[in-house]
Image (cartoon, rainbow, N blue to C red):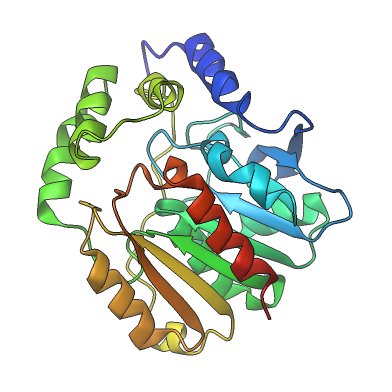
Length: 285
């Protein structure tokens, strides 16, 4: 989009990335849709864990509050979704246009990382991508965790869509900040993370792939262990409806509602508590 400051975005991105462990590594993975940026850390011989960010201005670096703890037990690979804000570079006008394309893209990322089988986690829109991929290619996924995923087990609240509309129609840093302050209830937000969300306003991103919620029969047949963590103060959807929907449909799911945290603040909130839940799930029986 005209007017987007690519250099300011990169500076903001690198500032949040600096919060990661010092032994991090930046990788470029070729896919049919372009080169995908992956930020990795953790022991190279540890089992892989692939992390997908939320939509909007979220990128791979948004996992900064959890990655050090996760990297104690896994080789962590956080991915910039192709066509979305981040340092991935799509091939011309090629970008995923359907759920099947997202599966092809993510399979290519996993192949490039040498991850024949992996743990997979996603926040918000990244949770939707992760769940859709697990439903289509469950043999590649060991365990799946979803952080307040959207459009998986419940729809959006009307108020959320109304507040998001001005930002979606004409994204500006001021509108992004106002929306995030509303959704998080004015809770303190990491200023570097917030600056990155503002810098992503007007990013020349492709139209994101969307679609209906996964079919109930497909969810009932998913033979994977799943951890669902829902933000109690989420204004995106009804958190208890999300948890109840998952319990009703997934055969092997563990759910919890995290107190005092909103949807958009979840990745950076209560890092010790969240990291302990995630590592316990990944290493448990």
